[in-house]
Each structure stands twice: as structure tokens, then as C-alpha cells.
Image 1 (cartoon, rainbow, N blue to C red):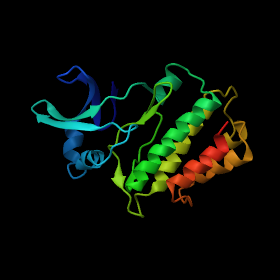
Image 2 (spheres, rainbow, N blue to C red):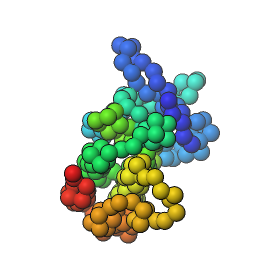
Image 3 (cartoon, rainbow, N blue to C red):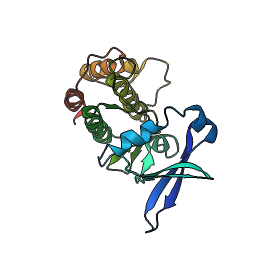
Image 4 (tube, helix red, strand yellow):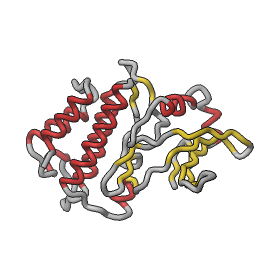
Length: 214
């Protein structure tokens, strides 16, 4: 049901027939990153949030090394955008964005930086969102691993959604093409800035609410 540089995900069922995800690591990448493979399991095992897949177990056998993860219903935003060609309404964009910043508030309160927020790693079932793939998640260190990385990637997801209804040629910068208010543009620019002054995820969520609430 999905694949990336580090692994392949399969839809499976547990012994009670419930859907689960088997994330199988690519053997070569698993060996290459031997010193970092544990981060995802360690971080997920310490998290409990409805928008984050629960780590249900680990399998290590002749077929490979797998994580068993809770299955989240819905398509990824990438699938909605590029396969279904969905145009997101302002209300949907607000709802998705608010949920992303809510889960970031939870993660950052536990000193966790997801590190790979993208349209491929956010699912949406028409109402609820979930944040997938914690393979690059790390604990914030104030230097290379910073909360601002998550804010910039979240802003990029919002821009994808905002562009879903765009019919122009795409020849100008987003802040000239998209019909956004001055406050919305300023907020997104701040999020995209690698030297972002934002430190508190609650503050970011509140700013988003003020800028994008219908």
C-alpha cells in the first residue's frame, strides 16, 4: 500500500481479522542505517494519539524485519490530489491544517520532531487526518533537529491543498498566485522560514486558526 526509500508497507490482518500495516524494511537500507533504525520504534512506543498509528509489534524473521502498525483509514493527501484530482474547499483545508497542528502540538510537547510531514504521509478520510511514517522522527536537540522543520513541512502541505483549486499557469511565486489575505501570506512565509521564530506549537495552531478559520 506504500513504499519509500527505506521500506515497503503492506496491508495485512491480525489474528482477529483487524486491518494492520506491515512495514518491511529494505534489507540493504536496514543494514546501512543500523545505528538509526531504532528511533521509529522507540519514539512510537512512547506516543498515544488518535492521529498517530500505534506500534503494535515487531517481527524479525527470515523474511525480514517488520513493524506492525495500526491501520489508519483514508487516502493520503497525495492520492486525493494526484489520483482523485480532488479540489479541497477552504473548510476542508482549515480542518486538515488544524488537525496537523494539533498533532504537532502533541509531538512537540514530548520533544519529538516528525521530520517528514508531506502529502504522502498524511491520510484523510473526509473528516479525520492521521500522520504516518515516523522513520525520520527524532528528539529535538536545538541544533540540527528543530521544531521549525515540522512547521515548514506543514506549510508545504497547506500550499499543496491551496493549489488544488488553482487554474492558472503557475508561473509566479505562490504568494502572488494564490488568493490569500496578507495575514495568511505572512503566516505561511514565517512557517517556511528555516529560522522561524515560532517555538510553541500551541502558538502556531492559534495563529493558523486566526488566519484560516472560515
